[in-house]
Length: 382
Ligand SMILES: Cc1cc2nc3c(=O)[nH]c(=O)nc-3n(C[C@H](O)[C@H](O)[C@H](O)COP(=O)(O)OP(=O)(O)OC[C@H]3O[C@@H](n4cnc5c(N)ncnc54)[C@H](O)[C@@H]3O)c2cc1C
Picture 1 (cartoon, rainbow, N blue to C red):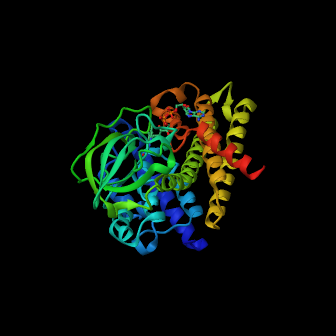
Picture 2 (cartoon, rainbow, N blue to C red):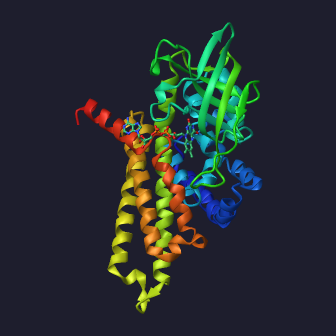
Picture 3 (cartoon, rainbow, N blue to C red):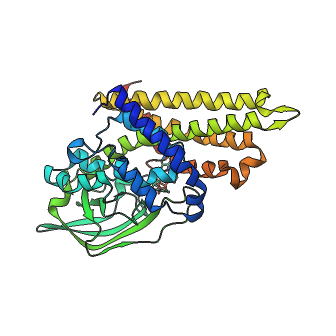
């Protein structure tokens, strides 16, 4: 749904205040304890954040992509670990169901996903299938009314809390690539599923990834998402959308960092004047601001095109590629502008510097985005 301008402004304003008043004061605590407090998760659910992208008919806000990106930019103004709480329900954990689910599948799961009553995960990556995601080896063997799943998934966001996984598994072992893969909705409580311990990561403490293994898991055939052999298509369409959302989060973090830099540069004095007066500092601010504006424009323009029904595979990849590389450069300049304080934990800049590094890796590395952008450009002839 496209909100009218006033409703959209109200929503953005509510999220902006929630981020400023509730989330930002907790950033250091969440990083230290590696945990987002339960009351914050409840407040996020009350605000409807788990259901941003779920159609209104199933209890969500049903936002258009542009509006979702505007909300994601606001959520980007704090530790990205907070966004990760809702990230899978809004994006990779629900959108396969929204785009390919049967009416029964949608009615069964989407209302609980939208309300945050259940958490979802998206399980594509495997130990031997990362960037080459069409190489998944997890097997799904048909036995009458069930598929039997065997295999291992790696680095699955929110798997420790998830009650529902979207799992990509090979239904046709004779077809090695994308065509042999199908997608399944796999409830956590089926026997044979093991979720590993959370990995220790470089940043985004409070957000967790786990290995997940499937050992003879009997999934009802009614839980297949889309047709047999369509699983890779499901995954790629989910990621197309996810890449725009991630691009928007990168814009939000960059805008936050620039605001922090301006405040610090005005306050910190050297050689008898605020460092903001030095043109070499101003040059860094100008570069960061220019790049953040460019990323914002690209992300929102692509979101509008998607809302208008255009195919945006190229533009979504370009958005994620440019915005994630951009926020890396902005974070690096922020450390520089803060000087020694940029390297010291108390100021929070080094934390954001570590937090943003993952944006260039997950949902397709920068190199994979380049591959997609080049392929689509060659296909389009320019
Ligand atoms: C915090 C975090 C959260 C994650 N969440 C999820 C999740 O919820 N669900 C999920 O399924 N996965 C998830 N992942 C996995 C993530 O999507 C993969 O790590 C990512 O796609 C890269 O795969 P890989 O780690 O196997 O790296 P590899 O594919 O081994 O890549 C290693 C290097 O080789 C480069 N490379 C690979 N192929 C090419 C090529 N063709 N051309 C040029 N360079 C290439 C890559 O760009 C990279 O630089 C998550 C990972 C992390 C760290």
